[in-house]
Image (cartoon, rainbow, N blue to C red; front, top):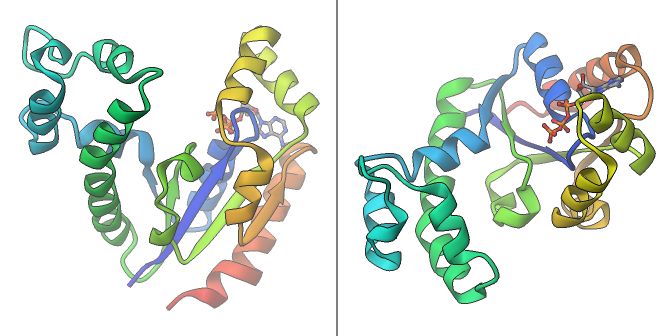
Amino acid sequence: RALRVGLTGGIGTGKSTVARLLIEHGAGVVDADAIAREVLAPGSKGLAEAAAAFGDGILAADGSLDRAALASRVFGDAAARARLDAITLPRIAELAAYRLEAVSPGGVAVYDVPLLVESGIADLFDCVIVVEASRETRLARLARRGMDEADSLRRIAAQASDAQRRCLADIVLPNDRDERELADAVARLWEDRLEPALP
Ligand code: ATP
């Protein structure tokens, strides 16, 4: 079976860049955001269950999910949020496990997941890598992408904290220096930690 690696990090830490570097070493990568969309895709059992729970108001005219309507339905309502999670999370875990095996049979299979802490699926992984960068670095990177500071700070505050991510981390990968240093660190990580851990 594959070595299942959860890869997470707060916004602007460089998680997606690390995922790309891991692909260069031969890893397969599964995008958690795509899996989360898939379990509520048109015609899926997940979407039917969500519509039964929250009403047809969460559906667009063409029968697909109206994400904004669902988001406003669960926003600030912990019980509704829990009901939605009960529908989506088991499906996400099952589909993720399947895709991770398929993307890199017997190799390193990476799950690129911004909200690892929040989605409670850490059990799925043999190993969790957390990418970290200082707040200043993250703000500078997000600014280069055109995000203003207030918006960046709001998004950072809305995610799990570094400390929470660290509690789940087997490996912490600092990314405050240039891309060259990051590439070197990922190469070392591959050789020293991931390859030797292959089942
Ligand atoms: P998000 O959660 O917003 O997708 P992310 O953590 O996946 O963020 P990336 O998209 O990988 O972050 O990186 C954010 C930006 O910072 C990108 O423009 C990327 O090219 C740049 N970046 C990442 N690592 C470095 C680095 N070590 N040096 C310079 N720029 C970097």
